[in-house]
Length: 395
Image (cartoon, rainbow, N blue to C red):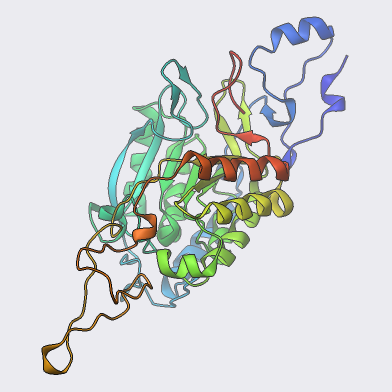
């Protein structure tokens, strides 16, 4: 019996696990991990290890060109980052890094008190590199102290490469997890290529807001193994008000589709750790469950019904949310007048204690989370970051 002859090949020609000459009853007893064969790999070699020396040299050249005329995100500010910076606040020679460490909080972490699903972090953690700066200005950002200003320490691409190898050799991590790297893609590309020459051999995770440009993702093609985009909102009005980016949703749609074309659906090796593919996050936000449902339908209809999705419920008011509104007072005769605040609401007639972004100044409800989950299931999505209902891994 040849099981693989009846199983489709996964994206990129990767070979699913084959079990030859094994009776059906015995095979079912042996497959205690409950891994669906199309998403199970015998072994995996990172994509950057498969690049030829010619392709690697071309990517180095392209990285330097991007820095001289920056088009790394949909803002396409076009600045020469050797001379100045754009909204991201980061130049060309170095990147600002806030934290480098094995991380145990990625998808999914502890789901129940006794249930740990491995995915990215495995037993040794994900080798996370938290970059400072960002090309968005999310009003609710839970890492605003890092993302909205330049903080941490400066590293060259070569120094970053040294850290990747240290995380692999000393920390024993399962992957290198680049967190908020959209604005430093050229430096990231150069660091991956340098680390390859130093002996790096674990997959690269690109942990992004999905506000990426086509040019940026083209540079990353062949370097990134797992794309981890966070598709935040659907409506242009929401992205304009909450993210300070008019075209976020359109850019995110194009980016997520491009990521899937590069790496396909999320695949695992037999230890239950993801090695290659796309995992889409969506943070459910108060009052925006309809946008979340629309995102799920888009993923099913235009990306893949086999896409792996994490519908996140940990939203909390942060950054500018819940802060007192800044009112402008003035007028003739000492009278005061309230002007519309930056969150788009007219403050007239409201008391002085009103807060900014009051509509999202609360946790999400179970009903809001359920609406998004139900929309995903009705659209045909079935792979979620849930605790497994068996003694194996959730894939």
